[in-house]
Amino acid sequence: MHIGVLGLCVSANLATAQGISPDDYIPTNPDQARIGQLLFYDKILSGNKNISCGTCHHHDHAGTDGLSLGIGEGGVGVGPERTAGTGPDAIRKRIPRNAPSLWNLGHNDIDVLFHDGRLSRSDIYGNGYDSPAEEWLPAGLDTLVAAQALFPLIAKFEMAGNPRENEIAGATHDRIDKAWPIIAKRVRTIPAYGAMFVQAFDHIEEPADVSIVEIGNALGAFIISEWQSYDSPYDKWLAGRPLPAPADRGRQLFFNNRCASCHAGDLFTDQSFHALGLPAFGPGRTRQWDQISRDLGRMAETNLLEDAYKFRTPSLRNVALTAPYGHNGAYQTLTAMIRHHADPHAARTAWTPDQANLPPAPWLAAADFAIRQDSREMARQTQAITMRPIALTEAEIADLVAFLHALTGETALTRPLGRPASVPSGLPVD
Image (cartoon, rainbow, N blue to C red; front, side, top):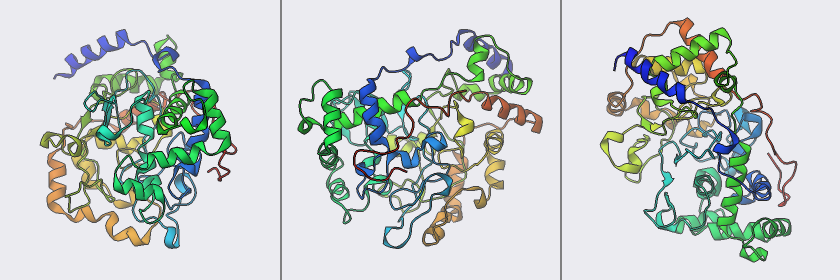
């Protein structure tokens, strides 16, 4: 497509752009969201009671953790300072992918989640979702966000732990849904939680009625209401306020140089999947029969060869707050990420392991970058790249960065509920 034609398409799109308003989000119940806030930071949901959702999606880090690949169950601390733990509690594997941003997940247009899109709205299993739990995902989850919130709880290296360490991990090892009733019992037998659920959910008459469905819906209500953002300088520009000159030049570059063909619409994502050829490292999200630490992205869910190494386009709202970037956090700065988009082949060649932000774990060091020694796998990933190079000067890259900063909400770091000082379980809050 010629740039001129693309420019006309984008101009037409901008002419109808309305920005985002509170009406664009799934409605939530404030009492349920309050329960969700507490559960979000309560380690009672984890197998070994040592990690919460908020550990890797912390308010101090705009809902992320600042790491390329997260440190899950067994780690210590939060954010870029989180360590891999020590002794028998030390992590046994890095989280294979970068902790995704939570911003605007409750927008009505969102219909697929996770880097590989393994959760989407669907009637295929009769419970409203196509998910890794298939027919075993319980019915009654109100939103895609509520469904998403349940999966980190039963992920071995994220929150569940190892099968011999606790009953949650052991039950998950038996079948994907077997741990959720155990988690629900942990929560509802805490008197404060039990009372709150009875008050917040009309169909819950006593704490014994609380199931993982209500827990998921509470977490979903919190995430949806807490991580809304629609008051950026760009939103003000849509309403008629001018942008600073560098950001405005970046805006014009963004909408006239293919950026907006994938980062489309008010959320700046087409919710589709593309192969950017990001530098490979880490344990990979391997399939059962994979013998190497690779990550096939969307193909692992669809089993379609044309989906190999494709990952979901992330939203760019508040992107300046949520480094590092890419499905594996390969780049620490927006400048570096833009350079990769401009010339993926050259960027892959120039990338060096020191660009990854991986907390030291000497017992994992041999595997961290082992995939890069597999020349055939590297060739397959390079061949799959769908991005065409585009010439950008350093000044243009700087302007694009200025525009991306203009997508940061003015109140992004001031959230409605924030991090609680304490939680009903009495466990420490990260």
